[in-house]
Image (cartoon, rainbow, N blue to C red; front, side, top):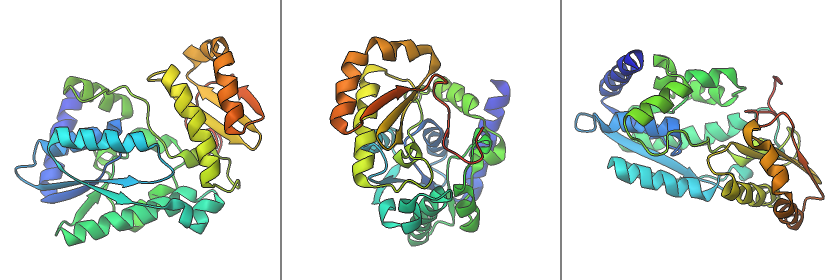
Length: 269
């Protein structure tokens, strides 16, 4: 913990040096920790949190972001984004996340310019380097900063610090764009997202604080869930099957490998 607290102090210094910052705020554990740190120096610098409302994210996450921002007493702006209007995103090639992040970060930069702030940052961590992230290219092209990654914070370290500072639910699963449920090349539509989101929401109501993904394979739904509760899926199958059928899936399968971050990503791992 001592080393982590030293990093925390470095992060505060980093933020103070910016003189003002706009933070891409999803309301997740990482962006909440970054925003909490910014709240510790809000009397010195201007801090603005920006959350995107989109059809590709669970609307509950937006409400949670508002609640957390209010608790931190930081200025919070909601913006609308429509990734499905972006051809490259909708067509779902392997650079899908690049198009999404480019639009988002461009909007954040515009807000920063309007508010007289020169630094925009996200909550990327060192742990994110292990995943396939084409959004990094958009971040770098637009000059977005990633102080958590720069200072060397890892995900588990942030969870422990969040617990230490009594931040909300530091061990909650990450909320990830619904587009990640589709294999590359599968066109993403609102109807398909609704099918996946209905099923995932139902499972989340049964399995609280578990990593859950409903991966889309046309007529087939593939359930990924933390390995320690795989057997519980089978115990609840009489409840699960009708919901998935009503959502339009013909076959419902359980992935025996359990939840894996970015299981559709390139390169596979």
